[in-house]
Image (cartoon, rainbow, N blue to C red; front, side, top):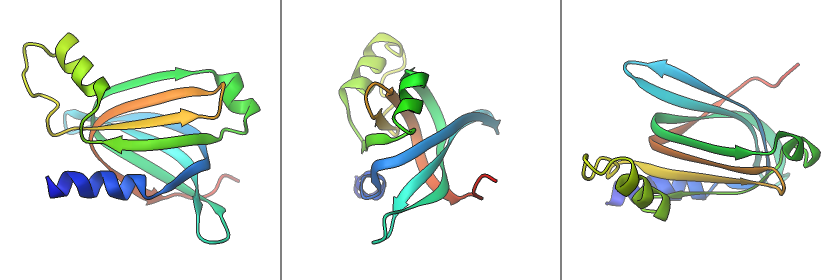
Length: 138
């Protein structure tokens, strides 16, 4: 359980408010799919936007309810984000979609993003995440 707490703590420690969501992509590798989100993460005392890619590894579910115009009007800002080892969404998915595969999401995390209203939300059920520096757009 300590490892699960470490994953959530490292994600939740990041400064998400006013970071920017620029793009997301799905990539298929080794019989699993990863979700890559290009973000500008608020970092440091200066609160600068640092271009990063966050890779959600071996995703099981990607649920996106996004108002693209609203996202753009709000400068692509993320309002908040969180990581949860257990959540109502995981329980709901397990009961409704995976009822014949008990505990299939046990080792997965729920990563949740709220964009500044009316931007919408993104929910990812994945095995883990990692941050990767990315080059700024020209």
